Amino acid sequence: MRWTVLGLLVAVAGCDTSAIDGVGASLLTDAEAYVAESKAEVQLVNETDDRVLHPVLDCADLQVRTDDGWEDTETAAVRTCPDVLYELDGGAADVAAVVLDVAPGTYRFRMVVYLDGTEAVGVATAPFDVAAAAPGN
Image (cartoon, rainbow, N blue to C red):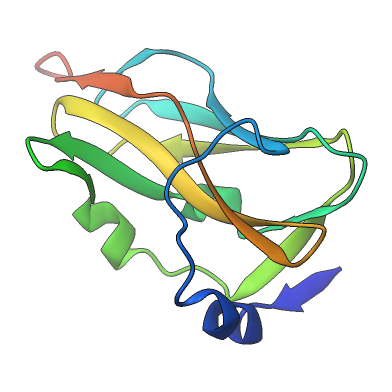
């Protein structure tokens, strides 16, 4: 079932959605290191018995580590993502492949999910490294 995000975004606008894991949902990647232009498998795991609402997984924010902390990449700003939330049943997982069209560096994926359909919680993957692609690839 799809849910419109507009009302939920308005309700969450003032909430602290810093990255928190182990609160009922986890965001994972399939590796700790990648090469630029490769695909990362991103998995959202619902560790509760209740449903979790989440946006499209391949629209998770891709953040880069800087001297000032984590910052959204330009990739996140130019994507067009639907304003819907999807239900993830208790104990279930959802997976998406995301192309890492970024410069070498340390990154993470981050998104806001809704536990029990209402409690906004920020989840993030562990940091991972992206190396430059070999010339000619």
